[in-house]
Length: 80
Image (cartoon, rainbow, N blue to C red):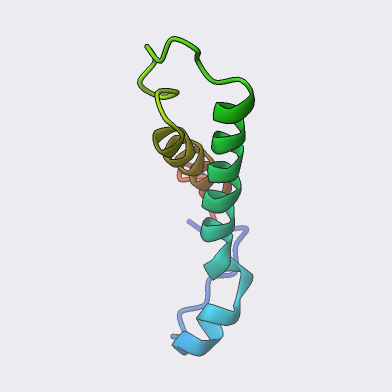
């Protein structure tokens, strides 16, 4: 099934996992998305406050972080 991926079945130690980019990539994506969401609220945000997404900076930052996380993780990819 995994024709184009090299999948290792060996268990790596937690110190090696924490030092790898694959461990930190979701955190970086969430952080960048949260910053982008907060900047969107500050510069473009809704004046009336009627939108639940742009109502306050916290919800806008969390929504942006979620989008950034899913942009980095790509949950629908077939392999690796």
